[in-house]
Structure formats: structure tokens, C-alpha cells
Image 1 (cartoon, rainbow, N blue to C red):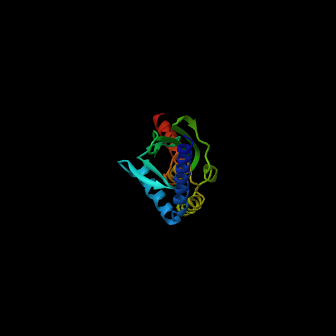
Image 2: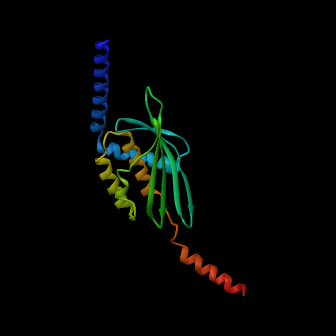
Length: 187
């Protein structure tokens, strides 16, 4: 009995070591490319697509993107596929207003229900980024990726948050002026 526990423990350690070495051996350029392609699937895609990132198999699908005068909301899901356990899902909601990310919320479903504390969102919440600045930030975040699946999924969410265009609030003065003109012509 003890022998089977030791052999099973050794197998788990070998598997974990293989996972860590896989995520560290992944070239940075490949990691950045995977995040860019996954981001495009989330924003523009029509079908689910699997990606390997930091040694984890993640499935992304098109997010629901809604824009109003009060902002843009992006809601989506990233699935972490596991071999012998039920898959885990990261449900995320991103809110943008006037080109800035206002908030990002995460929920993890799978092994129970829990929230996830963001590692990267303080890098981009409340700031506007040019496309070049967003690319530079994503490159830095990809370089600092650890071996956790939640971090890999959050990296894709961060990329989505930076890439989705938000024009809410920019037209408010223009719309207010049009309403005033309409009211004036009614009188």
C-alpha cells in the first residue's frame, strides 16, 4: 500500500515538473501570438477554439459585447480543460467607459464557486492606451506569466479589455446638443 502511494506521489511530482517546464520553455513570442489569436477569437470569432498557454489547454469562445452611452460591457467565458477532473470555467465581465477599462470581474466555476483576484488588472484599469502602448503592456504581461491556468486565462481577458474599442461617453456632448436643438424646434 505504501509503495503505491509513493509511486503515485512520484508520478504527480513528475507530471507537475513537466507542466512547469513546459510553461517556462514556451517561447515568449509564441505566448504573445497565442494571446493575440485567442483575443481575436473572443472578439470576432464565431466558434470555440482551443489554445495551449502556460502548459494549460484553454478553450475560448466569442464574448458578448454590448455598447450603450453608459459604456461597453464584455462578458465571456474561458474553459480550462482538465484530463481526469471536471473542467473549470472563468466567467469574466469587463466594463469600459470613454476608452478606459473601469472594472474587471472574475468568477471561477468548477471545483466549487469562487471569485478570482486579478493579478494584472491594476496595470490597465483607469487608463487609456494607444494600440502601441497596449501591445507593449501585453508583451510585459506575457513575459511575467506564471504557470497557473487562471493567470493564463486572465492574460487573454486583459488583452480583450485593451483591444475592444469603446466610444461610449465621447458623443454625450454631441447628443445633448442635438436634444437641445430638438427641444428648441418643438417650441
